[in-house]
Length: 156
Image (cartoon, rainbow, N blue to C red):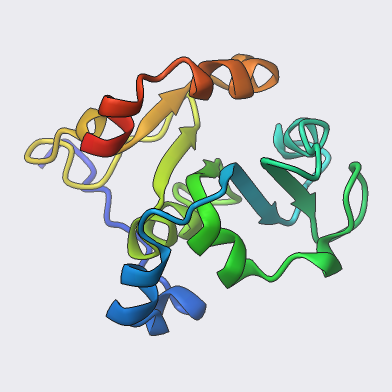
């Protein structure tokens, strides 16, 4: 009565089938600072993410072209299992599958959405296991992530 209840979008692809052995193998071997692979609608901030791609520790690719890197060279599951942080920008709806997928893959979600009400926010302190930035901060993302102390990253 008088409020909406945000419900998470559960993974429906590779994340739904990641095994405990794959997660254990990824622990301690996450060589990428952050990644994003997805459709980059021109009306969103997603194309701005693609500009951060450096091919080394920031893999930010658009599956519909554009940006600096070719999405075909990057397997989604491998990216997610190799990334310390997985960028979860706003999607077409209220949420993005990438938010739950990052968690399922053991990566720290970076929520890039100024307006989203996070699922179960009344009982989950999202600050303990995710990073949230404003859309206007996308260009500063590498610096913001590198500024998080390693002990805090490990705690997340």
